[in-house]
Amino acid sequence: MERKRVLVSERIAEEGLEMLRTELDVDFRDDISREELLSVIDQYDALIVRSVTKVNEELIKRGTRLKVIGRAGNGIDNIDVDVCTRYGIIVANTPDSNTVSAAEQTISLLLSSVRNTAWANDVLKGGIWDRKPFRGTELYGKTVGIIGLGRIGSMVATRLKAFNMNIIAYDPYIADERFERFGAEKKNSLEELLAEADVVTVHTPKTKETIHMIDEKAIALTKKGVILVNCARGGIFKETAVIEGLENGKIANVALDVYEKEPAIDNPIFKYTNVVCTPHLGADTFEAQKRVGENIAEQVLLALKGEIVPNV
Ligand code: NAD
Ligand code: MLT
Image 1 (cartoon, rainbow, N blue to C red):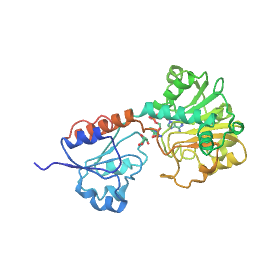
Image 2: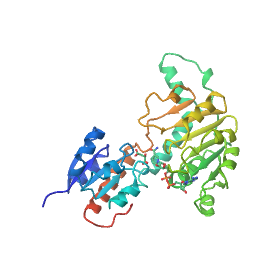
Image 3: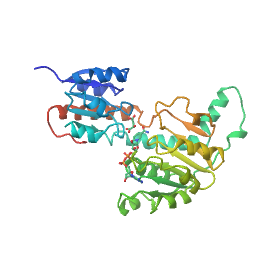
Image 4: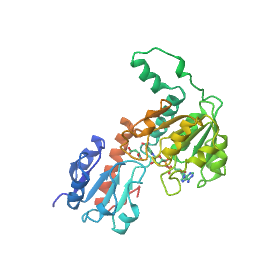
């Protein structure tokens, strides 16, 4: 019997590729252009993507053999799930596999941000020994406002508790018990959280509701000298508003892993020394990528055999 074919259009761990190869013909093409993707997608039974490949109707209607889209990661905002459903295509992701890594990256960005680590590193390696510009801020005793107390937000809460931070959270979709479990004081509105937090960190999916959730109006409600962290999705922060807040001194520091437009090249926010940036590395650890790769391979194999797929 002819083996089924899977196209992997973004880098996943070798362990996942190996699992796929045991049963499928695998084309790993992280260099594929959009044009080529559109022209070859009809040859594949499955497509595995991360966050860059846009899986929209233009692509789906050409994928006449497609049975499953595997999202090697958590957020599915790059996939039009409604369209996939309409065309009878399963969408599976790996929501738990990179949670720890994303939470740790959030903490890493926050610490780097409040202690100017990345900026000081650049200056020192540029040949200048100067301590004056880099005086930082302690997290101890400060209030962190967590927007979205799901998998990652709750892990961020427990980790920041160990820094003796006061945790407040806004998440209208969870039970009160979850706030209690993670030692977070529930805030009934975003406005309340923004008014009280020294640090605001977002951990929601990108949805119609959360796009530009942190905009001019939201920033106006924050304390002067607020620190903003986005390790969730580009677009939750309105970047022009954040730049305005940096310019007028309302915002002290910003830490970003994700951007409105990715890949982010020449983003105007890069020029600020009080903004620390990483290129969407939240899930990029050896441990998370091994879990993600194996998990998505397992689900794609199940889907192609017509078996139950856990994370659809
Ligand atoms: P999750 O579904 O477990 O938690 C999200 C939480 O956000 C939920 O509790 C939900 O109720 C809440 N929420 C939804 N809409 C909200 C709103 N309007 N206001 C307040 N809260 C709202 O998701 P997760 O696993 O914690 O992931 C969170 C985000 O992190 C996702 O967008 C995901 O794509 C992103 N992520 C980024 C990276 C990275 O590499 N930077 C890695 C993994 C995940
Ligand atoms: C995710 O949602 O899992 C992240 O964007 C990580 C990734 O795909 O690199």
